[in-house]
Length: 336
Image (tube, rainbow, N blue to C red):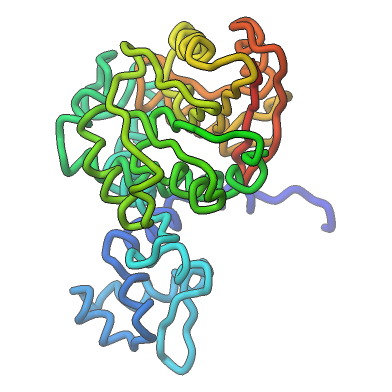
């Protein structure tokens, strides 16, 4: 009967992890990078990716049905989106966040029920210690994490580079810069700007390598430091992207206060996150990201634009606004 409820949506959501894991494994195997070199037949892909024949055809055809691959006359190729964003050889690659999701988050989310009952993280530590200490002590894990941050930030970094009035300012620093995706995108779009990224010392070599590949070593520098303990660098504009959600409300307020102290009158703090809509009904990604903070951190959570503006005004910022960026991300702009 027309209009009669069906369980279709429930089943698609409940079994959504099937499709998710197919994509994550494809990224892990380097499938999209291989197909970026040219289309291949089933047997060729089995050989190049060391796939057992039992599951290979279903795996590839599932990716066709999921619109990640195309198939024509028995040859598989990337869709335009997969070719642009999932080829490791391209600077537009966003698969870092998917690699980390596959290696770290996929298993950790299996503990969501325990996290909801205990309030404790479900990562490798399973306690309330700082998860970044162990992460930054592991060079391979750190690089994967930094590349993941580029993957999740690249779209909003490009949008921020285009939509913020950078022509009014001369210097900027990205606080918690990771690999440097945002500083690079902003500097490429605005040749008059100089600045850099502030992060823990082990990040320095990865940041400098990324900046050098973009040809921006003369305009972007690395500022080593710990934003939980050290003063922030001074600049016309400070940016915090996907930083505040890692921390408790007390620490959020403390970081905002540090930014206020580092800025001169007229200076700007830009915070960009997957901001939850003020009614907490629409931005499912933002709400799920907040649950990811439950899984990954001792006290982190995501927040609405209204929440963030209130914290900024409490710190003394005289003007705040919220503007959309790319996908689920938005930015809060605060003027001292």
